[in-house]
Length: 219
Ligand code: TYD
Image (tube, rainbow, N blue to C red):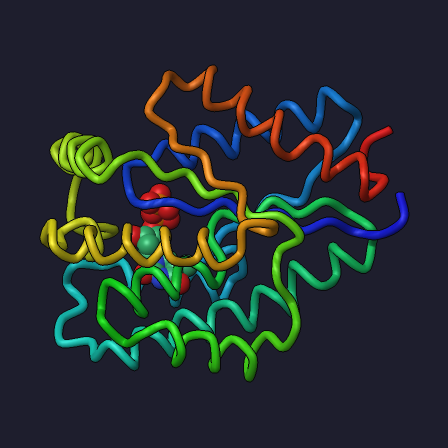
């Protein structure tokens, strides 16, 4: 393999993202590639503590810009500890969420705007962007239905701060993701995931396999 390869997965809450990441990991393994798995926020010791603070619904009164800065603090740590070393070691990285999440949730959802988020990305992350981003985007109606169903089953409040947001927040997140997909149609592979898990998985693979081959990750 010529170099590392960085794949991020993105989507609204309830898009089935976690399942698809695990399926992609299994598919890579079956093809002889052992990916480095990570997620944001979290994925490092410091990041896990930032994550706990960010997602805990007992965290009250957190300013939107403070939230934005914490997302990038987590990301800075993740880049230094996990992502860059993995890429330098010529590994494939599968990252559950990256800067597109910040653009969608803080930029769109919280209303801070895409420009501020992108400027901060430049300061903190420099040129680093995923080689490919898999964006799982069910229709707004389907996403909200799934997210609500999931909320009914989640226990406790320790990771529910974003899930407790109102529909209007998720509509802004959804619209921001659409805008990213339209702006960067090459990096961002959008999957309108209304179908069943297996059908969505097949579509993910159909779309990323040629990229992995072109990069020399798969032969
Ligand atoms: P998580 O439990 O990982 O949610 P999911 O399974 O839906 O990915 O929680 C991550 C939450 O953090 C999610 O609601 C999105 C939010 N988030 C942001 O608001 N900004 C960000 O930059 C990132 C990475 C996540």
